[in-house]
Image 1 (cartoon, one colour):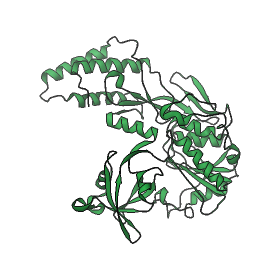
Image 2 (cartoon, helix red, strand yellow; image 1 turned 180 degrees about the horizontal axis):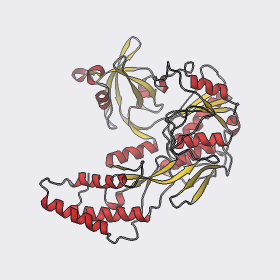
Image 3 (tube, helix red, strand yellow; image 1 turned 90 degrees about the vertical axis):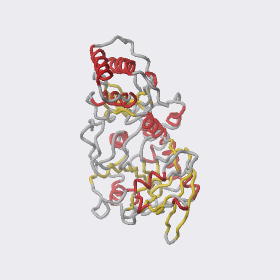
Length: 434
């Protein structure tokens, strides 16, 4: 339920709390692209500023003379959003209560639904399933990659995706835990009806398989670096090693980044103790190094990002000079840090196209302390690779630069076969050729 705040109290409280917080600075946690919410103590100086007085006067004018009634909840969100727009921060953003909750769930890997990733199959006017999360209700119900959702609903409420359109059909598939998604799938010549309960589950951020064209190569696709990623990465490596793979390709194409603790843990498996995996700089120009070390104090959703003594360098001998990373223009933030670290320490050859070029660190701040719902995201630091120059606004240039073939460049990456994926084949050929 949204907390109603009297308009004058809202303006005074918000401006004092937020304006002085911006001027005095927050105590923040280090996060790469998106991170845990940071709960702040109240700013030490809570005296009113000239700006506060001006906004109070404006509020009085609006209350006294405006023909239109002021919706305080909407105005609250607009004013908070206004702060994020004027700080000169391209990544600053205000999240309302619903968006903030979704953001936190995304970072923790928790989601609600049936556990499928889909694309719009425009040729067949249906929804194509390109991924089924391993722990999801969809997997238990027997849904498969390549299934085509042709109808949503059941009985008299059954409607075709072609008539509804992709977006409206997706809305009908989505819903809260405890409810059911009802739909029809075309699989080959069969038409199959499904009634799948939506639940809360941990989504897959790591996919893996033995290469179809070379059984000695294990392929690991990291979709993002959220909190479950380190453990899922270990699961993938262990399974591929057990399958006899001796070379590895890490696919971070279209990986938007993620949490600093997650990327730190993943890199710990391949680096050595006290290796620097990230260099940071705050707005005062103070630099600091984050090094690979034992971490045992993380709890809650972050527990999976702890690093034990045995974790450090766990897969180093398997990947050192025996691996490649595939990138594209949508490889960003923490995924670029992953790429640059493996490149800087001569662990992997980088293949593909130039990355996005995001070397700034954001932190998420909860507004609950101030009596408001939601949170704000702000850039709090710049960060740099362990050894090489920063790539913010520039991107990382691969060792082997190669575009997707024209015949497949418009296909979804998840639908590419190993045989037709020319960037993958180039990565396999480049392993060991650093």
